[in-house]
Length: 405
Image (cartoon, rainbow, N blue to C red; front, top):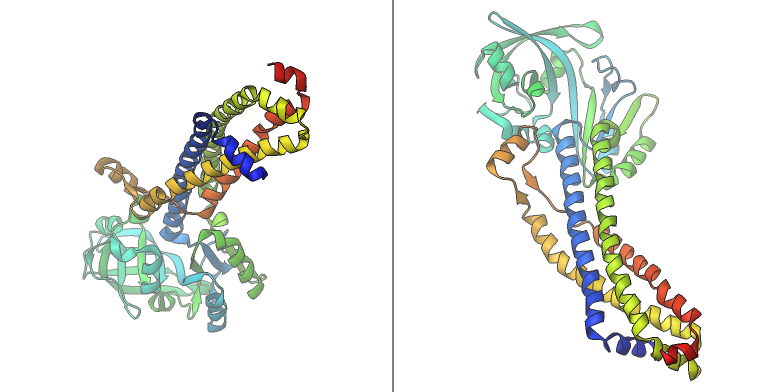
């Protein structure tokens, strides 16, 4: 009976009810759109950053993160590999052996950073194969190297030439070798483009006299939200006295801080939006209360309890809120789905500037369920809070005066 009364009361004044419903719809639609843009941008920033080098999670020897020397290497044996791969959410493990070296070609000499990698796995994580500008990519048993474009230009070396490398290997062993250049790779960041050398992992282990040793394992996982869970599981499977497990929050703290700062500004904008819409909703509740004073007085005079009348008004407001929220989500879902699969692409000039930092020149949208649920919760709670005014008015109402009015 109360549900029927509430539904009929809502549509007795269609204009007022529609204003309330459409204001809620607009708030939910705009809030979902704004939040989807933000979360989509964050997800893309995280993915670009971790795929650029670190991975979502990294396993390395304790102390390596603060002292990145080849002596802080460890054996990534088959037992540890199986434990890592068995964890739900882990898509790919990328082992690396990293150290510095002195390069020489004819009269040119320069320091460089050597990355011994599994070529196929490394490409799945960082898409390094797409950055090749000359030559062919490495294979697992390759005895050659891939050279960064800036370093190649400085050394005046081309594909097919042989580069001399001289360094210090594991536990002070001499490291010297001649390596043919298989390909030239162009990186977005100047620091990386001027110093990086890729080498197949077996070749790097031979060069640095570090058989079966690596300096780190970078992991690619299904979603950043699972980082903490996977890190916790990994820590339960490894000897924490020997190995350290770090999530992307610790690997790229600057990125996390920038996301948190931007997230705060986004939430402030959302609350400003809610505040504006809240005033509109309160205005309609104010009009509803003023226009129905005589009705409320009559209902109380014939014996209806104040508490039941208050519950009826709250039920009316709840129904209008549910209609507005449902309509807002229904309108935003197809729109956000389209932009999720067809993200906004920046113009040529803007795209060129953005890509120079190693970031894709697109504006992606997220379809995370929390986008829709959070807006629904926020609007519904706000509507219930605003319903306190008509409830309070009924509580203080004097029946005779309201009927005279």
